[in-house]
Length: 246
Image 1 (cartoon, rainbow, N blue to C red):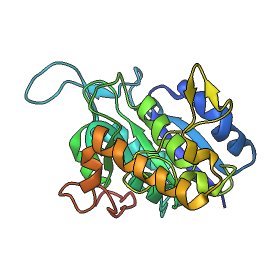
Image 2: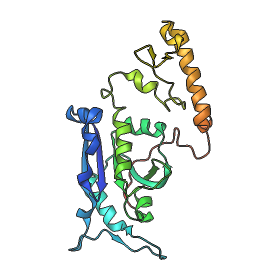
Image 3: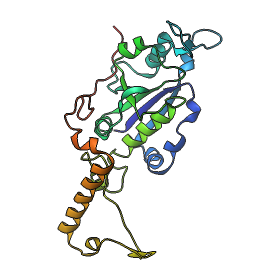
Image 4: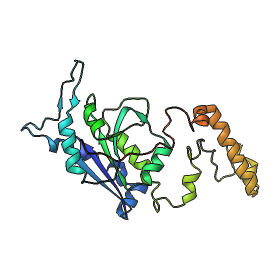
């Protein structure tokens, strides 16, 4: 069974983009996952294909209408579809590797890409969307964020990566940043590879790597060392499939 992704966007031509190359592209060709990009504008009902309107309460920008977004979801998501519906938005919970693992282990994902000032909150709540952010910055829309989410998930699908242990040792796999890497030549510009990596002593190599992971995490991301169980953390948070409006 393949992992299936559906993206709801105003710019379906942006997909598959980089997802059609390298690991993700080869995995798609092999049938390990599929990607469908659906145009939200197809759900508009007027001759101008209007999808947005001015925000209640005033303010700059426009907001995607709940009726149009809901109709786009209904047209793209079959009844009983178990895939979670993820809304990519700067106000969402941070995208963590723990959430990526949960999504990758499921049947796939439906990703809603916001534009303008955002999406009417009523459809977000009515559809039980998971609001996710890829960082503390604002993009022109959710398309690039959706690509980040999908790439992170696809590489964890069984059979996509060459070595399963590669994913287990990467940054964030155990709330630690990854240790530094070295390859040939053993000496370059007067800089030598740490001797322990040339020793052939696997236990010592493993200990060195763990120590370096802990050290770089303390220096650069001390928040990760207390991530498990932290209020507001998404680590281990359950996923809720998209729900139909009552």
